[in-house]
Each structure stands twice: as C-alpha cells, then as structure tokens.
Amino acid sequence: MMPLQLTIRRAQPADVPQIVAIERSAFEDPWDERALQESLAYYPETFFVAKNGGDLAGFVAGGIEDTGEEVYGHIMNLAVAPAYRRRGIGKHLVRRLEQEYAILGASAVQLEVRVSNTGAQEFYRRLGYQEVFQVACYYANEEDALIMMKWFRF
Image (tube, rainbow, N blue to C red):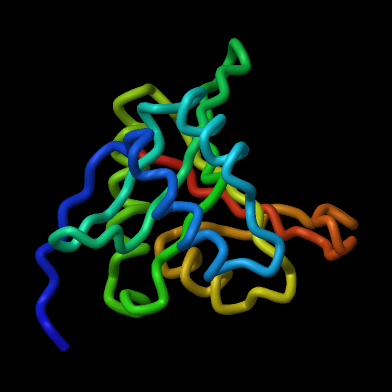
C-alpha cells in the first residue's frame, strides 16, 4: 500500500462529480448531485475534500446553526472512496471540520447515523462523540437515526 500524500482543502464546484461518485459508492440512499451542489453553495466554509495526489479520496459536508444562544456544527455527510477506506482519511476530515467549527464559535457538533451502522457509530465514538437520542423513521426506508454529539471543551 502506497503512503498517502494527503491534502485537505475546502471543496470547489469542480470537485462535485468526484464527490457524487464517492457518495454513490458509500451509501444505499445517496444524496443526489443537486443536494451536494446546494450543500457546497450554502456552506462552502464547512465542506472539505481530501485529495491524494490527483485523486479525491473523501469528503465531509458540514453545516452550522446559530440558535441565538448557541452555535452548533452539524456533520451532514462523510464518505471515503473505497480504495482509501481504513487509512485515517475520515478521521482527518472530521478533525478539520471540527477545527473550522471551533473557529466559527461552535460549542458542539452533532450528526445522525443509522442505527444499523454500528461501524460508523464506533468510528464517531473513537472521535469523542456520544449518543444523545434516537429519532424514529428518520431515513427514507424508515430506519431510525441515532443522534450523536461532541461538545468542545475550551
């Protein structure tokens, strides 16, 4: 296995076709191209890609919510290309997004994960996320979602 020459940077519109391909390879109910384009247009400061040379190896799409009392980050989507999985890229992407949330003044980050996706749940637990509650019938196939959060300690 070749060593990675990883670069993480903000996503650009030209990255969307490769992002769509990774999304389709990762999820049974993937976001479509339009949803990914809209996410990038609405939250360009919290949408990152991991590049290895000329390859797009993965991406993370985040959002930010300001309730007036608190600012929260939201990990909306994370995927790594099959050839690059289990090499730490997802962790690097999440850490970069968390750094951006801290800069933007967020006190915590939340995400949703399928209750059946125990691998993703364990990944997020290793990164410091905790289970908060469950939402019934969250996904299109009516599967429940587990809401997980990580609070920043400044």
